Each structure stands twice: as C-alpha cells, then as structure tokens.
Length: 286
Ligand code: KIV
Image (cartoon, rainbow, N blue to C red; front, side):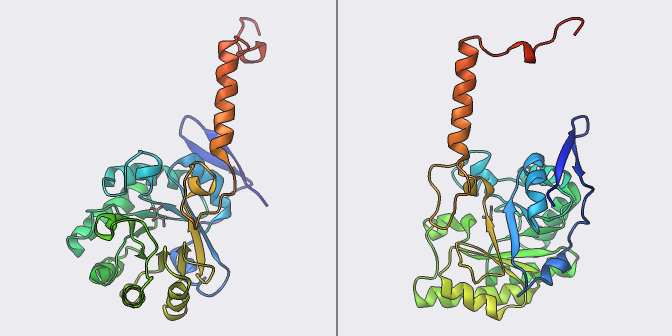
C-alpha cells in the first residue's frame, strides 16, 4: 500500500496517510543479513525523505550532498553543520526507515574520542539512529569505540570518496590482487569491530561476493554487484538529475529533462502573460 503525505507548513511536519508504520531499528537491519535485500537511498531534504521513506529500509544522508546540493567539487569540504541540518530535515520527513548520517571528512579520523564527540552531536541534533564512516583497518578501533558507547555505525570500504585526493580519482577499486586482498581484509576488520552494516562502493563483483559471504553484517552495494545484501544509489543520480553519472547508476527517470521542459513552459507563459490565469489569482469577494 502506498503512503501519501500532507505537509503542515507551519511546522514542516509531514502527516502520512495511512498512519505510519513503526520505524525500523538497527537490530532489524542487522537481522536482514542473507534475507530480503535491503533498500537504501540517499535523502537530504524532508520532502524527498517523505517520498522515499515508504520504499526504503535505510535513508542515508550522504555527504554526497556536498556535490548534489552545494555544488562542491568533492565531499572533502562538507561540514558537520551541513550534515546536521540536512539530517534533521530527513528525520522530520520520515517515519519508517532507519536514518543514517555520514560523518564528514575530518570529523572522525583523528581519534576515537573525536569521532565519539562528533557522532554524538550528529545523533543529538538530528534524531537519526546511526552514522556512517569511511575507511578500513585504520578505522576499526574507532568503530569499536563508538559501538561500545551506543552509537550504531555503518562502515564503508572500497571506493571511499573522502579519500579522493589519496586515491587520485573515483575509479573502481580492487582491480589487482593486492588491492583486492586489502579491501577484503579491511571489510572483515571493520565488520568485526562492530559495524551493523557495510557499504561496498565501486569494487569488483568477486570482492563484493567474497566479503558478503564472509562478514556477519549486511553489505550494501553501490557499484558492487547484485551479490550484496542490499543496494544504495544517490537518489538524484537514479532520478536522472545529472547528465553524467557513474557506470553503476541506473536511471529510473529523466528528471533533468522534465524540469527543463517545465521551466521553459513557465518562462514562456510568464513572458506571454498567459500565466497567471483567473485560476491562480485572488479577487475581493471570491
Ligand atoms: O555520500 C553518499 O551518498 C554515500 C553513498 C553513495 C553510499 O556515501
């Protein structure tokens, strides 16, 4: 059954019709390992969260908002303030999915204590249930530190966009044996450190398969084949908002073209004074 929403503009609160399902929990996501595929999409705004929420198990407030929303060249300049503002909006717009928020570059790598302080801030200010952080073995101690202190963590290995300066680009990872072994070892270490799910981004199919079969938590793939326990895409990519997308993106719509057409029709009607019409104006006594 699909859910529709009315938006109370005075509070920005969405009221779902029919009444909301209970929100999923981190243990429920964990328990999906090897079962029904986990559906995850990114969301950065309340309205998009409302639309995606009935279809997803996890809504990710990805630091990809740096490029998608802010027009930044990478995720590196993204701040905690951006993640908190968009994270809170997504929590307000959702009732069903687990909301997870990316820890931005520079907010968790220095020490487990730094990571705890910033992850706690993100959860307090947004109401989200979990954070996601990038990295392999070097992040294992931090993942254990956070999870033992009540902060659920999603790991992220393979292509880790925050490391773009070190990696030299966004190409798929694990093309040679040494790199493939390192990614598998990283995934196992981070999973054993306590994360409840793990994003595998831009890795060879064989690597995704091996990791998925050998770690206890669900894997969620993006450019990592159908062998993963779930899939994630950047919503604006799959909606066709951008001319160029990675090979692993499937476009489910062509919104950029449709927005261009709508804006063009609007502009033409404004210029020809055929908008607004009687239907859109206020008249005394009406
Ligand atoms: O930032 C993001 O949107 C992500 C997903 C693509 C996994 O990390």
